[in-house]
Each structure stands twice: as structure tokens, then as C-alpha cells.
Length: 145
Image 1 (cartoon, rainbow, N blue to C red):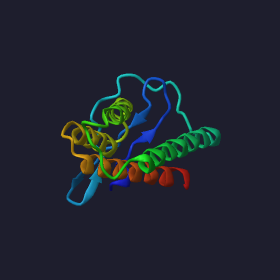
Image 2: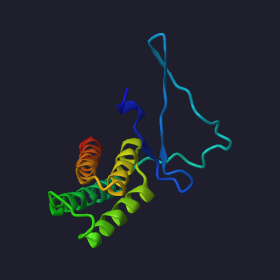
Image 3: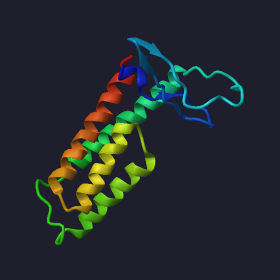
């Protein structure tokens, strides 16, 4: 059921993704759209292999960037003495929050933000690790189909 509700990339200028939803009724899955479609879609868009390759490349680059961030993180951080590093991590988190992602990615980015605001380095670090694991899973699931 979790896999059936993950975001679907559409690539339309009006709507980039769809969020499938379901409701269980006596053990049967029943689709419950949140909103009504007010206009007919202009044209169904099937993802081409080159679009998928581009998205897989982008996911791979993003995952590599996250690995770089993880690998460069110190085991401990002095929030008073390493203010430039803190600012860098705050900018990193702000970029993640601005870009969004699926529900789990947004939740993890918010946890990172709370960790920095609360000067809780272990909380921030563990959220970065979990965020990377989520992106790696999305990359693997999407690009090995």
C-alpha cells in the first residue's frame, strides 16, 4: 500500500507530480480523489526513456551530493565556535525545505532544521543520514524498474 501511494512524476507544467490516495473499505481498496478535475487534460504524457535517464542522472547527482555532505560532517559541532559551518548547514536545510519532496523527505528536512535551531547536532546528523537513505531508496526504486 505504501508503494501504491508514492508520488508519481507527470512532468506537466501545470502539475509536476500526483499523489495517489486510497481508502480501505471492508478490505477492498477504493480510490478517493481529493479534488475534482475541472478541465480535461490536454494530452496524456508518457515518460520517455530519455526523460527517465535524465531523472535518474539527477537523482544520482543529488544522492552523491548528500553523500558528500554526510562525509564532511564532523562527529561533533561547537555551535558557538563554528558559526560559519552552522550557517552553511542552515542554508543546506533551507534549500531542502524549499525544494520539498515527498512527505518523508519534508519531515526529515524539518527535523534537520529543528536540530540546528535546538543546537542538537546528533538529531541533525541522524536526520541527514535518514534523508540520504530516503533519496537512495527512491533512486533505487525508480531507476531499477
